[in-house]
Figure 1 (cartoon, rainbow over the protein chains, first blue to last red):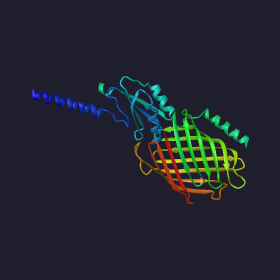
Figure 2: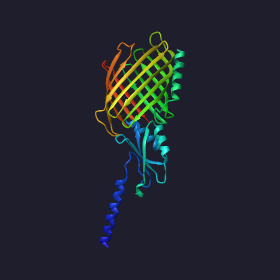
Figure 3: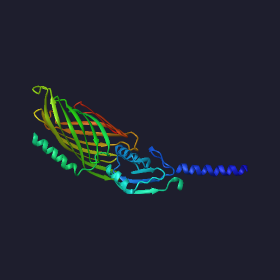
Figure 4: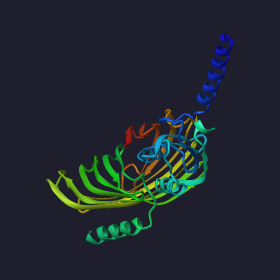
Length: 114
Length: 212
């Protein structure tokens, strides 16, 4: 029985670590483990004002739980709340209206579903 | 004078229709600029992604006059690439000038100004050019242009302190010192930007911009 509990704990903790390490980090807000994560490759992000503008615009949206803008990677990571969606067209409009161009949009399932 | 003001407004209105965003919609910017010629302060709001509008005040030291103006920034064109950004702006304002100097005892006159600005930057290099013609009636009439080159000694991620070393050259044809060169340091983090330098004439440059 003792062996069984220890084995269960090892399996449980190792799974927990995998989930925790798979969670992307965001500078603003948080990542909902049950929400979708959208990664946008954008052109024109060269300074902190650019990144700050993108953060402000996306964090106004009710669907967004967190955001991370990387000048090094030229990408915007948008974490959505559980059950919420943000269509590609809307993401494109938010980014272009902020003065930047979209190169590509990639979506991943929620961390909990992976 | 009236013709010039109308012309500036027409140019401004025409270009707004074709403009690209200046800042993100709903964003405010406050800034102060202090250089060899003047002190100035702005507060402006971007109602859409195409332009910003606000209040601009400036004090010209040599002629001892102030301008208070409704100021409009138009982003006419932006060029975005993976690692660079270029912009072309129109900047204009209309208001009044006030002076206490000499014969201009507490005198106010209609004033207007207009100019263009362009910049191109990567995360390592920066170039910019700006000019402005100011018509303050009988109080003053001036043309200024500035060019800048800068480089970043290191590149770091968003949210860290960014440092730029820059050289600004100002040309004012009617001024006693037609050319003034100012080496300066720019510090930039998040929504705040600071610049400080001293010109070859000993004038202090200090600029501050905050977005919210």
